[in-house]
Structures are given as structure tokens and as C-alpha cells.
Length: 56
Image 1 (cartoon, rainbow, N blue to C red):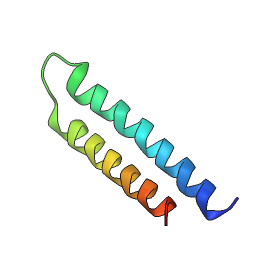
Image 2: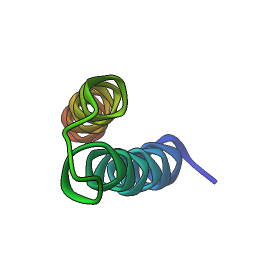
Image 3: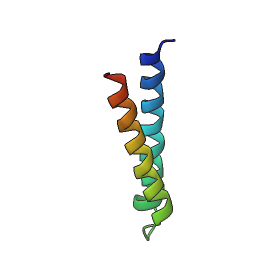
Image 4: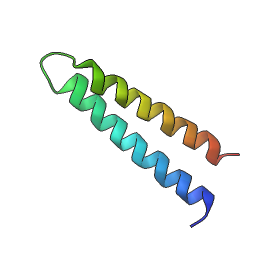
């Protein structure tokens, strides 16, 4: 595996985990639960950085 593959897989996993955390924190419960929602947004930001690094 080279650097591009590792960054791609990492970004994909971070995106999936972030989307799942946002779903569990903001969409599924009756009330918005902020810690999972904020953590999910953080996961999406890190995935975005991985995608940016992949293009270098």
C-alpha cells in the first residue's frame, strides 16, 4: 500500500464514522445531543484534511 491508498482509506473511514456520529447525536434522538454531533463534525474535518493531503 502506498501513501495515496492509506490516505484514501483513512478519509473514507473517518467520513463514515463522522456521518454515523452525527446521525446518532443529532438526527436519531428526540433531542440533539451535542458531544457526538461535535465529534462527528471533527471527524468530517479530519477526513477533509486527509483528502487535501492526498492531492499533494
